[in-house]
Amino acid sequence: MLFVSETAKKKIEEIIAHDNKEGYFVRVTVNGGGCSGLSYKMDFDNKINADDQEFEDKGVKLVTDLRSFLYVCNTTLDFSDGLNGKGFEFKNPNATRTCACGESFAV
Image 1 (cartoon, rainbow, N blue to C red):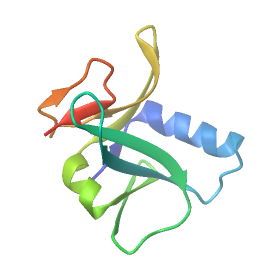
Image 2 (cartoon, helix red, strand yellow):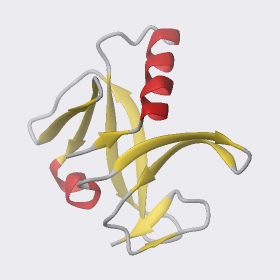
Image 3 (spheres, helix red, strand yellow):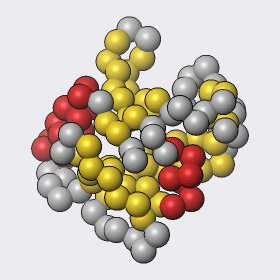
Image 4 (spheres, rainbow, N blue to C red):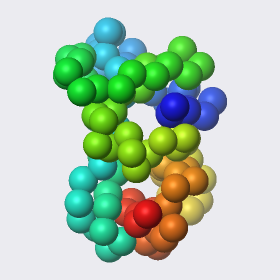
């Protein structure tokens, strides 16, 4: 399962409305790279692939491919607009190490 916080839900809904992306969902992907070895990628998409895993939390549809799901299972997508930075962030209980910027991780 993938989860979304209330603050991320509000920001996702705002982006979808502003960019006329009705019918789109959040696609989460894990790629090799970054300081810690793996990095997150988040996009808005409207096409489901054969190996996609689909989840819905708080009315937000989250999709990931099967390989990426192995790394992000039980992860919560959050949004922060505080003094320490603004943007989406992943709270991943599977990560054993993250870089200082929070954009890459290791398992």
